Length: 132
Image (cartoon, rainbow, N blue to C red; front, side):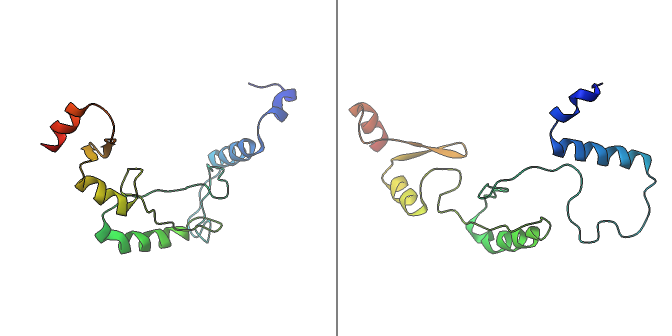
């Protein structure tokens, strides 16, 4: 339990949420429309401008379905959201056009859900083992 002098040390959004939870525990929930426009209530997360909210990795053939799903999901959050399609290949740090060329040159080796980069320098024995 906190003393009365310690109340100002807690953040404002925590107090707001705590007050909401205390009210909710004493109320009898009524049937009918609550939160008419379907906006989120309860626990919140503070998001900065330009911060990634959600990330989806999918096959190229499902691109249209994912974009449609994200467009519909944007209406459930207050504010403005943008959909950004990455130029990277899957969970790697390489662009799509670079990736296929590097795989053909055997400079990338599959490693789980990512790849290992094989540089052009190093022991000659390892290079011969890869290219034989």
